[in-house]
Image 1 (spheres, rainbow, N blue to C red):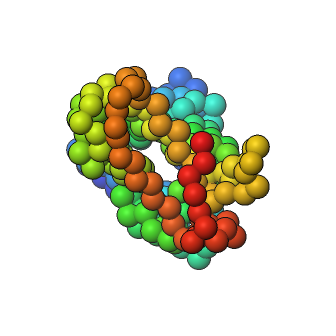
Image 2: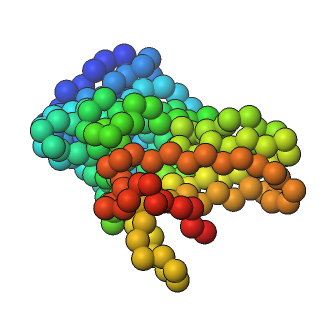
Amino acid sequence: MMLTGVCINAQNVLKVSNGTTLKTTGGVVITLQNMDLGNGGTINQASGDGSFRFTGTQTSAIKGASQPTICILDVVKTNNSKLLLNTNINIGSSINFIAGQLDLNNNNILMNATANISGESETNRIIGANGGFVEITQNMNAPFSVTAGNLGATITSAANLGSVTIRRGHTAQSGTGLTGSVQRYYSIVPANNSNLNATLRLKYFDGELNGQNESALVLFN
């Protein structure tokens, strides 16, 4: 199945069956209004352009046995609806929030090294109280205020950190000495992890406070 230079408005389910490959060229926007994307075949936009735009007033899902690679993912969900992940996805270029939320639902988003998230706000953002994460890996040699993928972790260091993997999740954390947390955590793993003298700034939204007193928040690792 090849789509070239058109905008598709579909309803119910767009299903890519086993043995089928969906390719897009020429800046195709596939608009899925109040419908799911089911992938049992191959969706791979990594080396090309094109986008999937999820719109409408009802919750939609990305699902299926095969993990899709989407170049651009637009979230435009209103009326308290959202986009739900029922499978892991790869992002080649960007996730753009125009309206609504993307629920990880215990699944993961793996981002290309040059990909980013745009438009996140108090009302329009990634959530995932039930688990899952969004992850990016970038090379960082003496980074200055680098926020890889716009995930909200800003790093500055005069050292060469090498390949750095940043993972962001939204489940509240618990453990020895920790009775509660905000609904955002980070795992940051640099290839070179000595004498970094790094500065790290972490971002969160008020909607992720999870009942915590903002003035009493501290870092926990």
